[in-house]
Length: 397
Ligand code: GLA
Image (tube, rainbow, N blue to C red; front, top):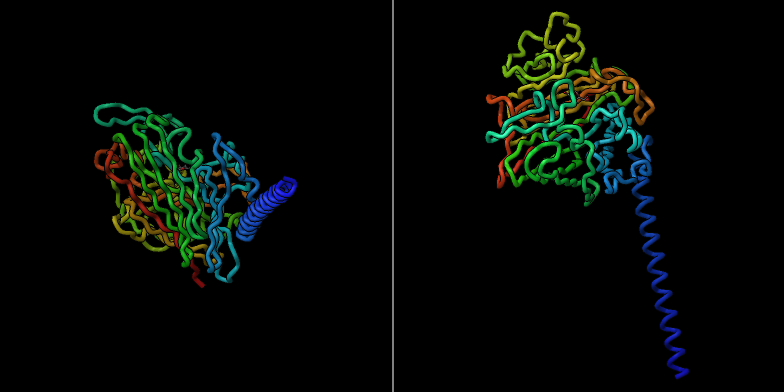
């Protein structure tokens, strides 16, 4: 008895010790992972600290994820709104340069200073006139949040929801979100998967996939604001832009397309050859520039899916950083930060000053649900929504 009791004591002690060892091993592995993750974040951008993103919103965990490659590029993404917070790539002298503007903390993305910075936008990106559209004879109403219209999926669009995130490796982040039937007024449960992939060639590929259980409308995009000279380096008006579009969709004073596809030739919208963004921005007589407060227009791309086509090329005048945009989408909203107010500060400490960043939102055309001649954004049950856009970074010396 005594003997067996002794054994039992030894056995229990051994079990306890091993449990304790395992616990401390798990803890130290977890700590090591945290430290590694934090090291990756700070190595990617000295402006960022993961702890300012580790929180919860709508009862779901939020975090900051980092993709990196061996070619000097890294991308920081939070699953709050699926937002690209930072894109660091080498400039013409090899200097790491953060070409995506963003905030330092989750709180700022949730605050009034946010303007869809870096965000995944949906269920319907861009504008729906008066927030109304008809599908199979039924009128649907989406919140009016931009003058008389609905912008970027209503009040709580995909930029403000928490996505489920899985990071399999250094190059891929998978995000998923189920938008409920009726959410923001749209019909159908929409299951969305977005995958960000950082390539070894300094390209960021964004694949958008969605399915629905009821006929609905879908137009997903990403709203990253770029400054190819680096966040905080001032105006983007001297960047050179080329857009592969012979036509664009002119708009009324509330930025709803008139329905026409107008030629860019002979107008300030002709970017078919590389031209400085600001070269013709003050063309006083151009009613379209007045309506947009500058460029805030959808370009009709000369080539569209199913395979990737080049939509645009932009060069940072100081950094020599070149961004090539490829997409399967038929349109691209070129927006040059006309509403940036200078009231908030970005992660570098620089303010969000007027026209210090631009967006190239690849998409179907604005107000597509109400414009019979535009490519349709209707998604039916049993059909797959699938689009891809690539932003690829290089340098011109
Ligand atoms: C889109 C719109 C712009 C503006 C920004 C966000 O790009 O076209 O008019 O609303 O989003 O500020």
